[in-house]
Image 1 (cartoon, rainbow, N blue to C red):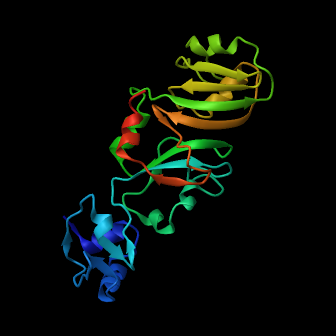
Image 2 (cartoon, one colour):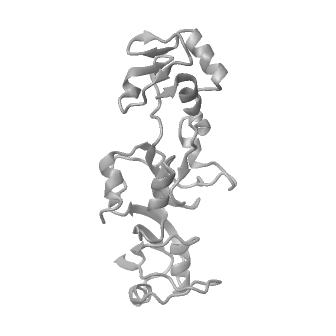
Image 3 (cartoon, helix red, strand yellow):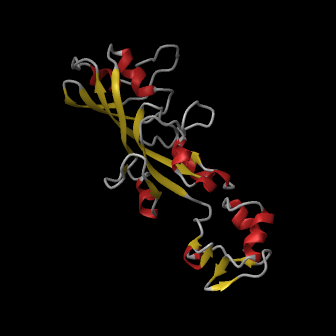
Length: 240
């Protein structure tokens, strides 16, 4: 059970005082009936968004919430980076949700593709834990043709990136053409894919992530689009 005013405030509908004002104006309706008491206790069930309306619209899903996004080029994943963020692609009030939403790992400004966003801390840490070794697959377009030896180099588990001391975990390279390849990694070091190709004398001109674990980027998500992840999609992350 949750207090109505606290629940709606945590979902970003305003301060508790502002939520009380919404209730007083009859704009909070449960099962077809306007609620009178902003302090009323509400059972937070899975079907609540179909039963509770605010200003005529179903409430946003309460925590825990995980989103699947097709991150477009030109946006960043961190509030600490300059530029437009992925959070600006979401409803504005979601920036006031508590607990707040965070990306599960990051894609840089010049990388597109599958991105997970969640307010579920344990789930986030389960995905990014080094022990989990969740694979991430990227499609890379390269400035120069592959020389044929990159696959063995990446798979050996001995490649050391510039300014680092520990070798990378083995990674799998799948050539697609002379200048295109898929690379599957199980780590998430800073700009790892770009730095791996730089280490073998090439340069990544375009980079796109299309898979995390066993979850593929949904074909119906255009760049900038997102939706709430299903239980099956969340489970697929851990099945690869």
